[in-house]
Length: 335
Image 1 (cartoon, rainbow, N blue to C red):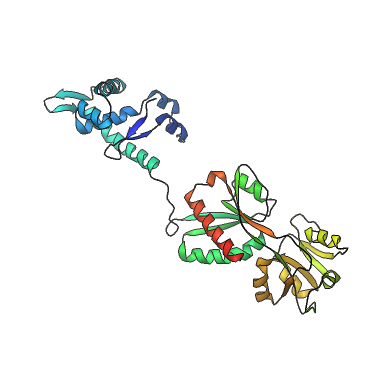
Image 2 (cartoon, helix red, strand yellow):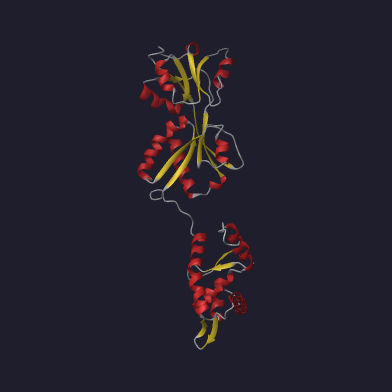
């Protein structure tokens, strides 16, 4: 198929392949897409240019074609519509009423098609309305969302946020099914359908209430002499911390296991427990719950904060804007 020629709204030359374009568009059920395979859409452009210049010679010059090619296109147009379309007069090629009707109908369609193809989809956060679905675990929500939502209230007042529960094991299937726009994750699992961008690293701290445990300096002996609360998304009663303790011939007793971080501050206020949590929670919990904090008295690997998104969303302007906001927030908060 010959490439379709567009002319910016004054019919200057731009090229695209019409058949591939039409097949990529979801066509209404009332339209048989096979009908388009029988039609050369370049003919529509010839019709529009002929209507404007009223001359085969001028149309050929405008379209950078030879006169025989334009004459052949005009012949095909006449056969397609069963009408002469243009008749030779002393004023040039005068359009018939049928040609005038066709041009009136085709012009806005071609302009709309040009706009769809050649006007990039923009995203205006200050004025556009949009609901973003962000996947994350509850501690990341506590850590990040208050600042993000506060910022958006000022800079993007029509943007709404829906948080989708996503622990490290849920993140991959959640994104593969595109049930979220972006996931903030501490996992490292991969999928060929997804992109993971590693943003920052951070560590852990141990928290407790001074009213429940009287400790001035947290030593390893003090650490293992009291009960612990553990967050486990799969209900396990030990973690990498316990394996590190075993290598030193030590062990701790985990008294409470939960999949949620949100219950820990009140537990620590009421029970003599230690809880080892991501450092992002430490400052707000100390401020709001008057808790004590100290480095974990055993070596713990850092966790790595990542953004995860579906490859289909990679170039979407709105998704890129959201990733930029989250990336900047993570880098600031993880310092």
